[in-house]
Image (cartoon, rainbow, N blue to C red):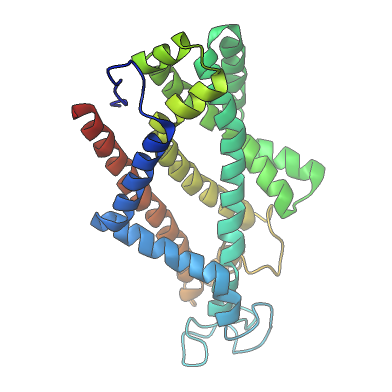
Length: 302
């Protein structure tokens, strides 16, 4: 990855300029490339559904018998009904919040824990890095589902417990990736120059490391968010996350598994919604990362 060059005085650009460059690159990536526009449009649609979905739902997502059970799409029920006569469209609109917010919070927590540890030990190196890395290796060897099962069996299957347990699963993975990225940047001349000037560790991390870790952070966050969304959906499908009668998309897939042939829309609708969310996150991350790499390369050529 191309890094920010030194100026004639041996300093990197000022913090504001560096973050302004990154912010400008992100804005251009959202408004410029076709994949950025598509990803942004889909994400905005999901944000709208999360905010206003319950208000747009034609029926209560919990109401039983609002239509004939396992009925196909009709003017009264645009996506049909499930096996106990609940409106699928209403459950799809109201279930978006748990599907999106729980994985998002879990991913943010994983990055707060794993990112802090990974960047710190990657920059400091030494004995602490060796010990933390070995601990991370042990945690990575444990099956993710087993960790979550132990936590949920101990503390219960509430949304907060799911968020914490999933964050614990993915924190070591985030720490490992950011540790390696930090070590690659930590030996660059502009970091060594900051050390020679006597700058503190927090200052070097904020001014020198994080701006150059931005592309890696964004791509890693998008990848982890996609994995976490699928993982949390799997937990809900297995009955380890939100409980009935929650209109969660994972629960909807579980409830519709026996009628996939006779009432395929009940299965296809939440599956397509999950797929669209994963594709949108990937498109957005690729567009932003590519734009930031180009921006940083242009800085280097000046």
